[in-house]
Image 1 (cartoon, rainbow, N blue to C red):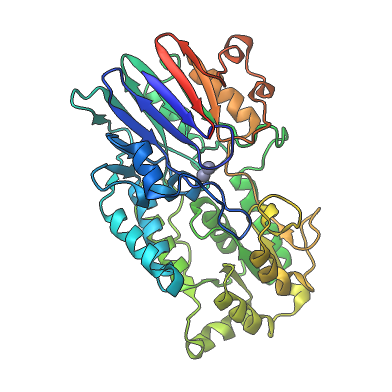
Image 2 (image 1 turned 135 degrees about the horizontal axis):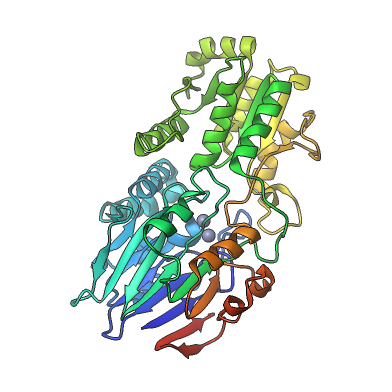
Length: 447
Ligand SMILES: [Zn+2]
Ligand SMILES: [Zn+2]
């Protein structure tokens, strides 16, 4: 077996290629480089020619989740190559492209992406998929918790060896404890040769990260202090939506939970997927009130919002800027909080990923708002990492205990995985340069 890590030592755009001795090849993830602020980044692989050259003859492309840095190049893959992802992940991608297709400059590309998405195949968690004429590669997907809804870790069996590719994951999300249950139920611990593991937080912070449950508690604290609460968060992160929704309907004030029709439909689809699968993402404690695109239809809702206060999910767009303008007219600013619930770097000048448009969008909300969370300055900042904490990386690597190699990917170029502090026998197995070990060839393509 040969494992090739394309663009491994960077966050975003990591691609893993696995080839059996008989020549069957699969790819895990085909992501675009992360955008450069509000501008797209220049990605040499983002052409049909480059993707054809890379993936020609591949038996399948398998995506761990639907974040752009893992899936964005899917539309460039030849139609003869099967592509796999979770069904809700594909559904949410489709809805995003449908919405964007209304924009003239994006219409054509979005329609092309929608057509390509129609041919996707879907995972069933725990059910193996077989590739190659002699079925010499088997891939079994398992749910993991991440800030993208419907994310998977993949177990790959090939030439008598077992590889685990974690994808992006975290244990501090609502379904985070599922990872250890999967490791236990499917006898993964001690039975893995190579572990390919994300390391986004390596070199970033050694501090414990807040759990999603604690994020929900912070929302409750804010809602207890402020009558009107605007929340800017990812519209597809089921955990964060659950936290905001739960906090809103846990207060005794029974304030309306307000969003637009796009967000309401997303919530509906998430709850459909998780129906009967546990206590989370049901969104059935109280109604999601829809703020209508036709302002004449919002009179009743506006009156309710004025009287009772509200929690409103917002997105950075001209439409929301208009609506916020209207709503702020009746809000006492002392009673109003703006909660920024995403990566802070998007709106902090000078940090990686600074996005001028998002920063401009939040200005009317920031002006005059008094944060009520300790340590917040311009707004109430309530966010936690979508990725594994250092403690979790250490524990999961040690629990799985791979026999041959640990290959860190998806981390900043200067991050040193040895700082995770794995026990000595495992620390010695960290592989970051070309090697042949136990019959497995591991190569790196950093281009
Ligand atoms: Zn990622
Ligand atoms: Zn991700």
